[in-house]
Image (cartoon, rainbow, N blue to C red):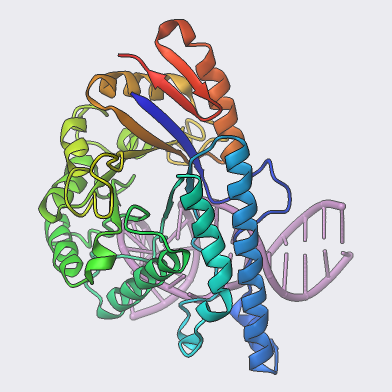
Length: 333
DNA sequence: ACCTGTCAAGTCTGG
DNA sequence: CCAGACTTGACAGGT
């Protein structure tokens, strides 16, 4: 099994390269000339896109092929008070440059719209805002010229005291979405509400690919082992939605998330780095049946955690872990 | 240069 | 019905 590792949004190794600079609404309103304020937002966005490209270059130099974009590339992009603002014309070439670089280097990229995007909500307004946020994320991918192999990963959402009906509401709301939003979506099990079996069921109903988070699975489960449901999770990556735009001879591999508990007191929090043993144990359990896997590292120390994990994996050379490059290994079953 | 309270957004809990 | 916790990087205003 070929395993490629990636990291999320920002680097701790590249200095002054935040892709998430922002502006508060309070300071936006303080600028009397609204046009000037909007130009400032666009300058910040352009800077975020520029830093994103810098990070991608850094990734290329470190042979890192998997990366998640910051969702905050354009500050206040979906804010109510800025509905008349279309930031895309001014940023088109910056977005295109990112997409070109991703395609030239065969990278796998994604977004993770944050926890305000909730399709299980019973509230009409929250649903509207969630749909707007998903549209915004797809527009960014479109502006990059990236097809449906670049996904937006989300959670199912709240339970509102009745999980089955919340899951059903998610499914109904999902079916209202435009096809281009649907085919760019992945669903991830969360650490409090929708566990692996529950998330998997929704994915199976909708034909959506499931991103397994093995840390979330560890703190929110029904007694199953992390690898128990893997054959079914793996199957969700073979659906038409999951493979939309993927060439038949090079299907999009499944993806998992990994992180380690911050402490015994705070088992949900994310530690600086990633513990190698639990991850390796999982990988060995699925290696025989999974040709290829992408692993998103969600550690506090971002790309530094990736580098350190790779160093730790090098010690397992005699035990079936073959080092390929700075972010890739082969796990021999 | 460094510190602290605050930030657009949701949900859950406890009062 | 409402305040506070949750969680996270970055702002904004202060020293």
